[in-house]
Image (cartoon, rainbow, N blue to C red):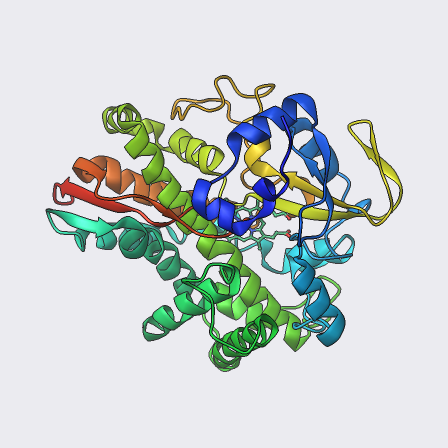
Length: 417
Ligand code: HEM
């Protein structure tokens, strides 16, 4: 098979075809560390096997998040960067830091994201899921992404970050412009992409700055207050720009990922109605179902690292400065780890998926993401009498946070218990 590396990285192709599972399966078998030179993008090594993704992730000093971006840049982005410098200047977020700083900064918020910390959010998460299902009425048609999948994480994240309800819509638009700016439906109108990103950044800043000031004056028991008054374990207070960065990373890392996990869940159940039926009959399977949804949909498609020295990955020499890109979507369907990896099976156990990453940068919000997804899947399983597609799925043109942007469905629901 000829590997057309644009299939791995072109947002348009993700919009048209979704994740390239056939190609990834071939690469795992035949060329698991494959050199890619996609036209218009940075060149990189594509790492596709589960074990090799873990091997790279376990060496954060050698394979850096900080040395370059964590996404594959287009040639245009590289040129913009050379001309204008980084848009976000000195603003660093934990996902773009290496140890030892990464560990210090992660500790600032990790207490909040523990299972115990998150259990205090159960009420918000369950209420949001129930209210959204209630809003559908007994029967009808809707776009599941618009009405349910994107609104659930929006409400949950806005609540923990102290964002007013009336600002939620604005926040949603800004997030789409920031993260899915490759997609014409979400692109912000501006003279150029650089300008667009700068404007979006400033609007986020204005919104979060208001909250930071408020929480310093009126502390509450929430993440917003924790971040606004954050100190590093060294005792130093967090620089202003990095406080803002923390808000931004929590919101942006948490929103579209959870949205796509939820639409991935429904897509999986529509394709596999027997699995929805199985869940209805066995509600105790909800936790395993959530893990399978994350494995099967893998909303975070890939991550990029930069080799800090000459090294080898699965025996393949890579040079200092090379980009190493691992495809979580591929690791999550690796035949060496998963039985019938292309099947969606809510009973899969154990499920050693990489959907939340591995090791140093393992998803900080994984417990919250699981709780949010679980609450919504539980509502669906309890209340759906019938659900079926009411039109074609439209996928976001993004290579990074992948999934549906439109998922029209027709449904009949029973009222909440
Ligand atoms: C289904 C939903 C989610 C998925 C699939 C997901 C996936 C991931 C993945 C794969 C990484 C690792 C990135 C890397 O390798 O560099 C990551 C990191 C991260 N995630 Fe999530 N995530 C989800 C939800 C959330 C939520 C709800 C939050 C916050 C409320 C969040 C916050 C973060 C942060 C802050 C990081 C960076 C951690 C670090 O660099 O130490 N995520 N996530």
